Image (cartoon, rainbow, N blue to C red; front, side, top):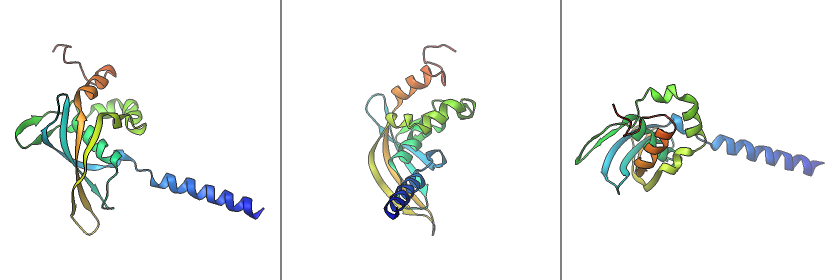
Length: 158
C-alpha cells in the first residue's frame, strides 16, 4: 500500500513540475533588430528577450523573431526598415488562429536559432536582457499567412 502511495505521489509531482516549467511564450517581452540579409527568402534578426532568470528558451527566441517579423517589423544596420508582414491588430482580430499558432508551436517551423546566446546583460537586480541571432523564413511565413487569410497575397492587387 505504501509503495502504491509513493508511486502515485511521485507521478503527481512529476506531472506538476513539468506543467510548472512550461513557459507561455506569448508573454515574452522582446526587442528585434535586423542583423544582416540572410539567404534568399530569410531574414536574419537579433532578438532580445527580457527575463528574470538570466536564460531564454529556444521557443521564446523563435517566438520573438516570428512575432516581430509578423507584427512589428524591424530596422538594422546597413539596410532599410523592414515593415511588418501584418498589421498588429490582426493578431487580436484573428485570435482563434493565433492562439493555435502560438499554442501548438506552429511558429517554430519558421525560425532557426543561429547563435543561441550572443549577448547576456544584467539590466537590473532582477532582470536580464538576452540577445540571440535567429533566421526567419519570411517566404514560408508569408505563404502560410496568405493561405490562412491573415495577410493579402503579393499578387492580389491594391
